[in-house]
Amino acid sequence: MNELFEKLTTLLLEKNDRLSYARARTWVEILWEDFETTYAKAGREYKGREMTEKIVTHWITQYGEKLHEFAAVNPKYQHLLDDENDLKH
Image (cartoon, rainbow, N blue to C red; front, side):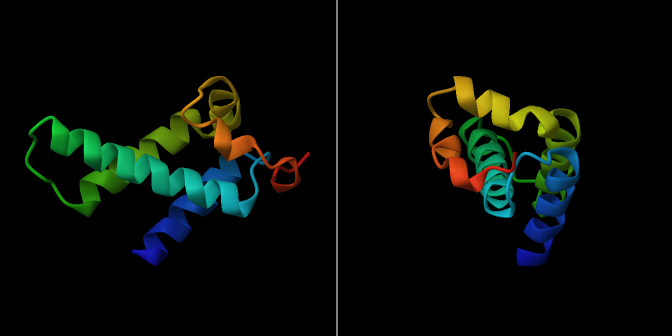
């Protein structure tokens, strides 16, 4: 699982150079957990890690460059930007 998260973190860093490695890794973990939790709450049958990887990869590809902006205006994710020293400028 760690290798998979590393791969997704690298992809996110390629899309968004404003995030530090630690913030990008946190985003990957949150996106992964949010998808699996939402899928389960909807009563869907678990399709495995491959399905989750496909969805998270899609989200990173589509929205990765703007994740820091989304966090800034969404209270649920604001804590991801609290530490100014952790962002690249």
